[in-house]
Length: 200
Picture 1 (cartoon, rainbow, N blue to C red):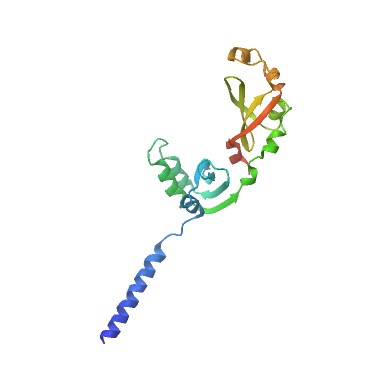
Picture 2 (picture 1 turned 45 degrees about the vertical axis):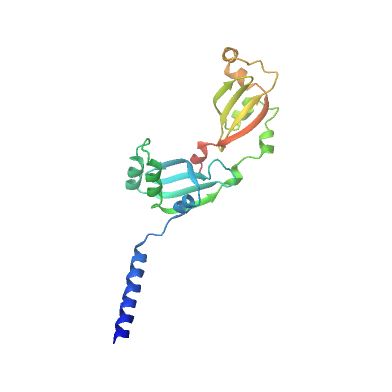
């Protein structure tokens, strides 16, 4: 009789544990990426969908585009998270971990090779703009560097040595068309563009 009671109690305990396990929500692909050390480096959200790019720290060895369904309520909760909250990232991570219909796509091949970047050497800033790049700034130290955001990636452009831009005052003497005619000496990859999130 004692044996029978022990067996029944054991079975009841197993059933209880199984019941507890069934209540757990299976983690989605976003949670898995976070647990593997990936971080969301850029994102966009609407009432209906969420899209983000994931990478490990500053590494571009592997890059993922993640898309998920986002209800109006989920969007409202996501949008309400204060940007300057010290635990804002944790709040977003928790909310994103509950999204459904998650699709993860490896987009590492969208990172340009140096050979692709070098194809712009000898061309002009106008050629770069014709390919969908937008000038987002410049810096002048011992040389003039221009920053450009493209449809997929961002880059830093070094001008040909014949360019006489050495100061901000020099730059002010150039019209928009003058700048477009300047020749490119080198192009360096500087990160992925936020325009990537606008692509279907």
